[in-house]
Length: 511
Ligand SMILES: Nc1ncnc2c1ncn2[C@@H]1O[C@H](COP(=O)(O)OP(=O)(O)O)[C@@H](O)[C@H]1O
Ligand SMILES: O=P(O)(O)OC[C@H]1O[C@](O)(COP(=O)(O)O)[C@@H](O)[C@@H]1O
Ligand SMILES: [Mg+2]
Image (cartoon, rainbow, N blue to C red; front, side, top):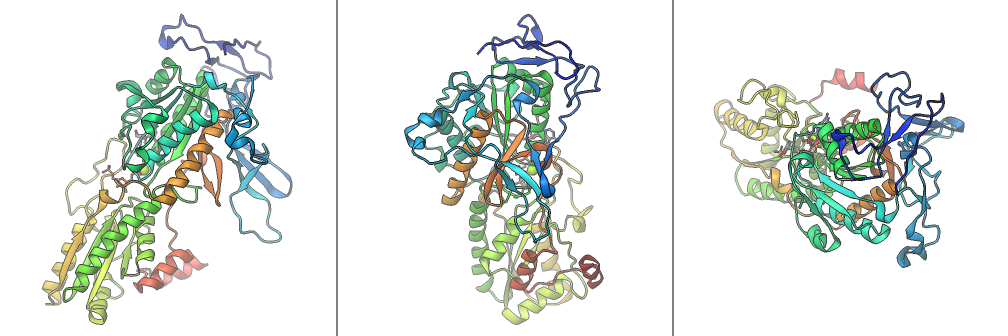
């Protein structure tokens, strides 16, 4: 579809001009791009001369304290976009479903436990197919990129994006960007078809490759524009969603008809708002195997101690869930719960007690736990990876040495400690059955959102329903284990470990 939208600089409408092919900076033959010129009177950019202000959150309020934290839509900055009937209504598989399309007003409550007098509270737009779409099938040129660390299920999401675009919306042009964000401007692309992706969900990793660092917003958006891409599916964690948000802002600033969709991928389960990230269950299952091995080793030796280090840079969800699932773990240490070694209530005292009672024990430690204890004692202090994430020191190795040293020198006690570090093994596997289904729903929800013209959002389950969540909500912090929550209490009660909290802290927290 080739359209020119122009308007006078009225007070109520933004001023747009059509893409100018003579502009060598963005030389492209694609006709689906609209440019926003500044200054404009668009509410999201008003008052800014020469450059765009960030997209203001769209908040819609209703009666009784109802709040919708809405996601941007292409029509927010490109008015009068033509619409099409959703091709799903003629699709034999879907046309038989009663009420297949979601009501455009459907929203998902962030909080489902409420009291009689509770206000309506925060809601997100419900994911799903809409009757009207803003892209024709022939018009779509989609791309998929995977960034950050690996996670079980990435290939399933890629597969389902490609097959969903093909089967549900008749889209035939889907590009894979190789090697993460930097692939937009430094690598080739690969054409993705249902045939190419047919079996990939059975493999771990990502067929597209991934990387850290290399997010240069202007170069990425230039590449999107030059290639004529109008739907961008970005699979990645908290850092990636930050990057996706920057891409969305730049696309909006340039006034392009390009939908930017984030698909949350994090093995650490540290992305805000969503219930749980895909691949997390698969990773926990794999972690169980390491814990089992540690337990077998520990119980076969006198004073046997099995130490297992698991992933979890800032959030201890994997360690917590693997511990709760296993029942063989006697102590779980996570970044959110500071601990200490010596003295009453400390880790050494607990280990001694446990060995006396049971003759063996298993300790699970998340890689980000206790970093403050060993700061300055090991090399690579304050080093960062290409994405700016702090490189952690090996807490598992450090604590194993400390335990051995303490029991040999101070307790004159022979212990048998086995240290297991399955770090990469838990994330390099294919996803399990339930994660595969999760990935399918996630990918399809992402497609429906982009086709319906929504942009600048992350898709994910909120209280069991997929929703479109504005980027700013997922990048404003990290999801962490709350150690004053019932889940952590369950863990403490299942392991019998000390809380390592000073009674004064607990009283203050309860207040
Ligand atoms: N604040 C940020 N702004 C823009 N891009 C970012 C930001 N943080 C990370 N990125 C980019 O996102 C990608 C993945 O980030 P990373 O932190 O490595 O993994 P993850 O997304 O899994 O957390 C990298 O290419 C990185 O450059
Ligand atoms: O060695 P790499 O590839 O940087 O990955 C290690 C890190 O990746 C993580 O799994 C998290 O990565 P993401 O944020 O990309 O999901 C951490 O738990 C771990 O510290
Ligand atoms: Mg991350």
